[in-house]
Amino acid sequence: MHKFIFLFIFISLLSCNKKEIDMTEYWKEFQEKNVEYKNSVQPQSFYFCDNKKDADECADLVVKKIKQATSPSVWWFEKNKEELPKVGDIAIVTDWNGNPKAIIRTTKVEIVKYKDITPEYALLEGEGDKTLEYWKKVHWDYYTEEMNKFGEKPHEEMKIVCEYFETIW
Image 1 (cartoon, helix red, strand yellow):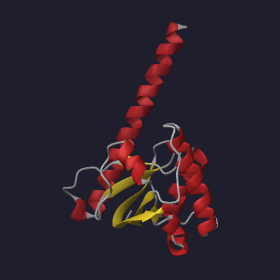
Image 2 (cartoon, helix red, strand yellow; image 1 turned 120 degrees about the vertical axis):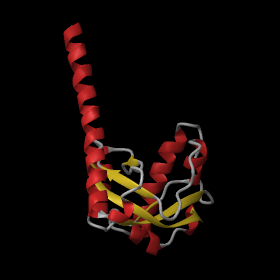
Image 3 (spheres, one colour; image 1 turned 120 degrees about the horizontal axis):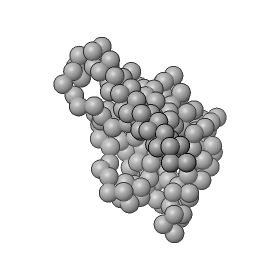
Image 4 (cartoon, helix red, strand yellow; image 1 turned 45 degrees about the vertical axis):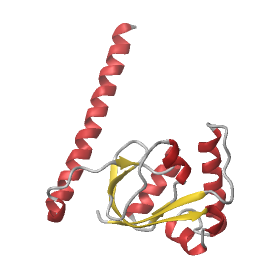
């Protein structure tokens, strides 16, 4: 039994190190082909959403340059003591398993109340049928899930970080 546990941990560590190497190689390849980023530090990497199906679909939409925006809540940034995104920020988008899929650059950041999200913005986010109705439903569900853990609920007046980006790799 102990041999099995050790083997599992060893394989897990190898897998984790392989992801780091893949990410580093991905970033170095990008830098080689985009010399203006030659001296830039490897940026953060992340996946969209909170489940494999949606994360992988969103990564694919970014690769295809369909998804050009994302909408975390201001609440999330405050709860996690994270800085809001800024124009010019670079990030590596991954699939659910942490495989690098694209590099994005933030082009615009707006703070908008949930109730004021527009159909044009929902279209830029690029998910589902790209309608405002779809955007509102899936985001309401998402915000409800993330806030529920803290005994809080989303509301129409809550502030959303509308982060616009372009896929640069």
